[in-house]
Length: 173
Image (cartoon, rainbow, N blue to C red; front, side):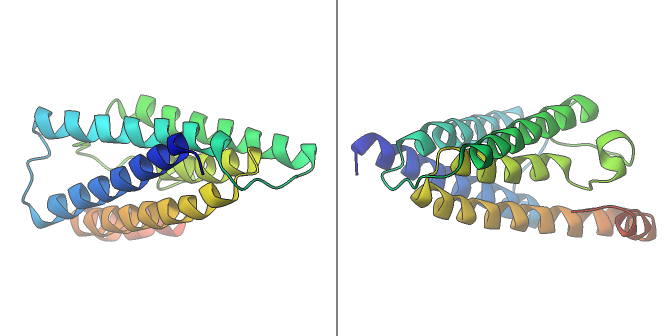
């Protein structure tokens, strides 16, 4: 296993842990989400997380041969995921402290289009590169994303109550 791969894998996993720690601190009220310093740190952590992911998969030491059609479908999933994540940021006009329930646009059918995009990135990019170890690491990433989603669901239900429960009935993920 080459050292670059191990560095990228380590960065990916450490950044996931940092982001999850941030989410737990938010939930417990121990971090000021309005703080530009915390926002900048988490923004950099997420940038490193995704850059490590996109550099890690092509260097995976265990790759299997997949049909080209599967690889290109996976690449398409990656691009769709990228579009969902960027579209979410554009629609929300931000990443933190959104102070209203958004139920239009990308949120019409997806409660968490950004997280959906992240999951598509993880699966799509690993399969596109036929990257077995990266895909396993990606499953850890998906587990973290599902946990972040649950924390957000709990917070939104607490904040918006029945309105959110009704919205949730008509949406995916």
